[in-house]
Length: 517
Ligand code: FAD
Ligand code: SIN
Image 1 (cartoon, rainbow, N blue to C red):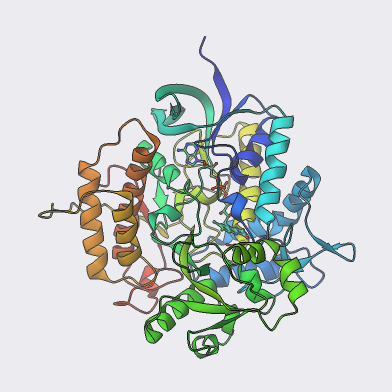
Image 2 (image 1 turned 60 degrees about the vertical axis):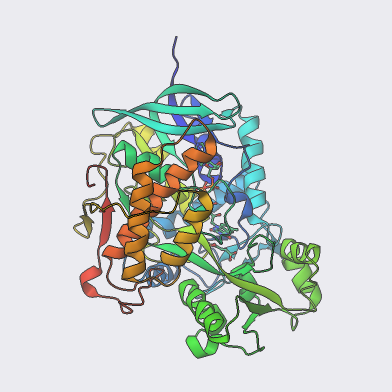
């Protein structure tokens, strides 16, 4: 007889595993994940997790910093929930066994860009994500959560606007199976693989956004993608992240001539908001005709560098660079998807029984630019609320909040172009990096949208993981290019060279949903 699970969760990063551990207390749970359990963005998180637990901090201060970073597009109700529920959720992680670093018996807190006080908890110095992922996966195994690895979700099954289950491809056997459930939680993570240079691992292919869109869910704020200013830039070396906490502890950006340039761009200097630093690095690279700038920590006492950032130190050393003695070559890289599957404050989408948690969700807390280390926090705060909501059985009104600032837009029809380039992962990543990247322009966005629309029409995935992922990236890339083209202004992480200022007329969110094509 076919089993109907109370919860199916797609993904095994912090969002998937934390949700699974809570759901286990409320019913039957199945976790599907497309690789092995620990393949996820979460494992790579370095800087830490933000929460107002310090003596000189308060949820109100955390609220203000988050709103300021979001550049006028944060959902204030969601941000209130985020900052007020943060300390309790951190206590949950501590109870689960996440070993946050301490100093003199107190949890150690560091500072990152655009936070007005030190409020970032970290573990293993710069290995916060690895500790969270290891702790949660150990707990999930102990709790006997049923987890199917190498199982790629390929379609959400919906009838009459209610979720029925999910179709998944066993990527080892090449077979497709249907799984039924009452509640389906998408926890599929981000989309960094849209771009040529990214801090994200291979799994970050926007699957949740694409699956949800095809099922009829609303996608919002998809034009806002955060570029991290400092990823290692060395030939043949992946763009490994150099945490913002390195600048928080005193690291300095210099151009290829050794000049400290950030004070020329922003009063906060090296700790200006992430979007400002990424664009300044981009501009400085163009000005000096170089593909990199440098991060300098040689003035810091070596033991601080090696003990506070052991992973970064080791990674660089393995690539021939002792960062206590020499400068780190860095450049911006695609890092975090602010937009995603639109949810309300309970993680509900506009489809009954379909929830989204983590980076694939857009709860509204990040607005146009995420405050550093708010994403791990967002996961645990809103995942908990999904479980509260499903426990109450409340599903009467699954539609996300109906603020008038959310506006539905149709996707324009785009004409085929003569001799389009063939669709491939590398062609897509180069296209998005060049035309939908850190600095955008109407002409190049239009070109990208047209090529992506052509690929969307022509590319049919076969029964393997890479081609499903490519189809998902093409669809999400198209939504991103179209939204970026519509938004004729610059705001947060979205910068248009042809509209360099924010416009009050654009203080609204773009929403796409299927049927708008
Ligand atoms: P993920 O951890 O990416 O998990 C997604 C899961 O879904 C994976 O298991 C994946 O295999 C699975 N999956 C995807 N598609 C499918 C499918 N179709 N079928 C089945 N399974 C699927 N944030 C902070 O707050 N602080 C930090 O210090 C920080 N540092 C970061 C450093 C790096 C290098 C990176 C890349 C990100 C960092 N972030 C940080 C962001 C943060 O790590 C992520 O936003 C967060 O971990 C996302 O968690 P998640 O569970 O939503 O997604
Ligand atoms: C970092 O450590 O710089 C990344 C923090 C984040 O993305 O929140």
